[in-house]
Image 1 (cartoon, rainbow, N blue to C red):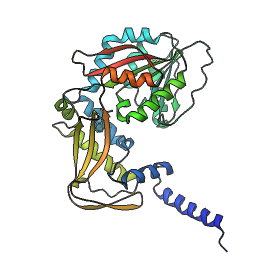
Image 2 (image 1 turned 180 degrees about the vertical axis):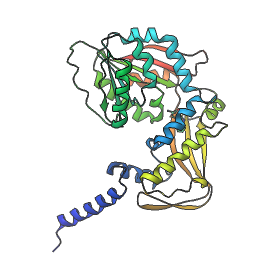
Image 3 (image 1 turned 45 degrees about the vertical axis):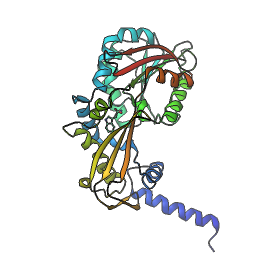
Image 4 (image 1 turned 90 degrees about the vertical axis):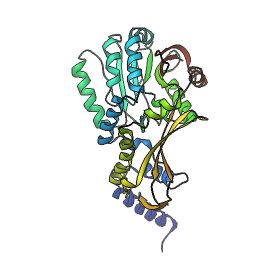
Length: 331
Ligand code: TRP
């Protein structure tokens, strides 16, 4: 006799076996992938951009004439690092969300108060360990305390112990803009709760500007951004049982005026059938798969969103063109 619970157990085992076959990604990620791709309009999670090839391509994007955010943010930081370091103060910890290679942090690490502990937070624990080892060699006196965590989910910071020391979250790169406003607000609140009253937030965000400048930044002449977008399909073919034919999609980047955001798509060049994570669907000709959003703010608009999450604006730094902004907020 098959009882209800054994039926359940075998269904679970079947699912587990299926997930094991797609060995490289966890069960939650399989569910997330299916939820996005098998609905309409289809979407794919942007976290799959950053495999090794994708990380190399993204570094190339940052060097493109058209892609202004990285270099503009770096120049803002360079021009005002002393004021930023003052605003951070002798903080207990400088906590970087999504630290990756910690490239942008080097400037701050060279200048911040000697007692500040650097806490890089990144989802990839192997990479995090490697980067932390490199930083320890480069900054032998600096305390470095990495945390392997997915910052899009609540995670625990070890208690600071130091009593009155202040924690400051660092979130560069306008990564906040890659989330929908409701989730961006959730993240800002999570940061606020982590640092508590009196804590700080140093954050980079991209500003609204001429749509031709924006569209060029996300659709460069050399086609590097197109390769970066398409690489997401190659990555999913490898880790999630996808059979995307890379030649039959084209990169599309559009500025959405109403929602003030760049929308990145992969557009199907013909009618085709695709399998991903064990399921199959049809895409018609010109069907678009959403792969990324990049929201653009006004300084006032961003300040309001931060205020609603418990952050008071302390100072904003920007460039001469007002293309990008770095803000210091206090909770
Ligand atoms: N955070 C970057 C941004 O929004 C990410 C990015 C740049 C990106 N170019 C891209 C993401 C192209 C997908 C495709 O500016």
